[in-house]
Amino acid sequence: MSEISAKRFDMEDIFNALNLGIIVVDAVGKVLLWNNWISKHSGIQEADALNHQLENVFPEPISPAFLTALNNTLTYRLPVVLSTALHRTPLPLYHASEVNQQQTRMYQSISITPIQSNLNESCCLIQVTDSSTSIKREKILRSHSEILKKEAITDGLTDICNRRFFDAHYEMAVADAKRQKHPLSIFMVDIDFFKSYNDFYGHVAGDTVIKQVAVALKSQLSRATDIVARYGGEEFVLVMPHLPKKVAEQFAEKLRNAAFNLAIPHMKAAPFNQITISVGVCTGIPENDSNLLNKADAALYQAKLKGRNQCISLPLCEAEEYLQQ
Amino acid sequence: MNHLSDLHLDALAEVFSIGAGRAALSLSEIVGDEVRISVPSVQVVNSEDINSTTLSLNSGRFGAVNQHFSGPFNAEAVLLFTEDQALKIVSDMMGSQMSLEELAEFEHEAMCELGNIILNACLSAMADIFNFTLESSLPDYTVASADEILHRLKEDANQPYVMILHIDLTIEKRHTAGNLVFLLSSASLTNLVAHVDQFIGRFS
Image 1 (cartoon, rainbow over the protein chains, first blue to last red):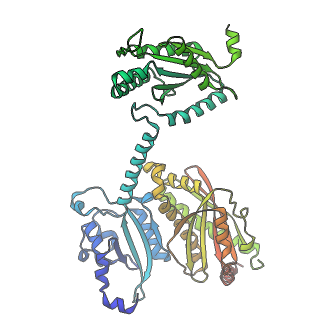
Image 2 (cartoon, each protein chain N blue to C red):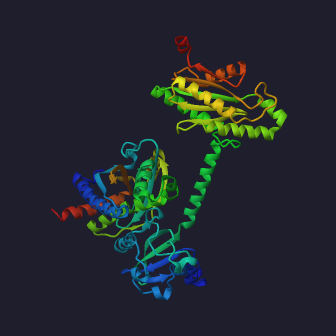
Image 3 (cartoon, each protein chain N blue to C red):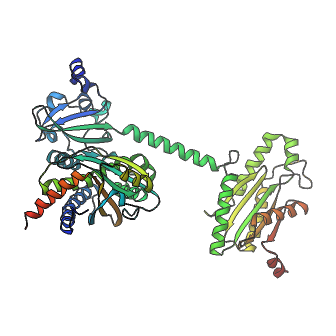
């Protein structure tokens, strides 16, 4: 600091205006400087702190790690940092409004640096910053990122998984099944005559149907390994590992029933005059060139051709089909 | 590198083992569990001879804690851990207080502290045994690739010597290896050797 600025300002004013805590102790740990910030957050006035041993100034104990660090700095003249992560609240400091209310302590970051006084004494400068704000900011950011993460994989209309999640999940499920040689079942589901429903009842009613069908499909799942996702428009896809082909076929039938039992009237869907779904399912142990999704889609196409409101199951490879016949 | 005999290196290894012991004690107090630190070897090389093998730097990113210190000899001390290991050490040290996601914010500060404890313990052991006083800056923490670190270690022509301490750190059964690197000018190295000579002289 140049001489001019040192004369122009009273250093005490500057210390007291700082938005961080400043304490200076001498070689035996007696307090020589105690700024306003520390007074404000400890509830201890400068006059009550000056010339007292630092550890005796506070009514509550100071953390042993802080005292060790201070002692090390006094002995070896080496600077020390105490991080929030490892210490949290070394000094009994509180937010201003809470001082006399025994609230939780303020999170602190502390650095202790050796300094030399004008009288050539070895002293220590203790700087304390409030890290509560950065902790709060971190928590807010984290909860935002959790919300965003969830939004990124959720379908906005139905609240089930979206296409993006399905694509990633499908790839992993196939890789898993390949590696562990266990069967994987893919169900492609499509709402029958949905376009004419939309045309006749309107898009708002159409959206409600999509939501209801999504809920009905989801309610059939009970294992953590199974997922249902909105594939697009009025199409859904389900991924379920470890099901024997027979069980998968029975499950497809359960899905069809669940949608049928919603009993949503649809005047433009003969002969049932209600909302129904078609289901294509494919079960198998995936190999290099096999594509469960294409097969399930082909099965769905057949279900549509055969009159809708039904389930069609296709084997993953032609050899299986041949063996079954 | 004719300045340093095996005897010098043994003496330095002993001094740093004492420092490592002190650092382990401080860390144990913070962690509330046993922490062990050992310095299995000390090496002094020309900075142009260091490469990724000398520092066992493989690919990936490294956390480096820096402190400049001065006194009877000046040096830049750099403590190196791989970033993954640094994160694990910090999360072990913090126990269940904080999750790994929360670590990001506090990792730098906590690594500064970990480095500060190890560096100060080594410096204070030197100060006690060689009977001198060292001054030091506050620690800085940076994350860098192996190439960036090597570049930084070699770029300063005024500090052509590098003293490397291999450090083994065990916290709560997790074993980690790092390096403590001192960058020294030739005058500083000569001074250090002189102090080691005095120390050895006391026993012979």
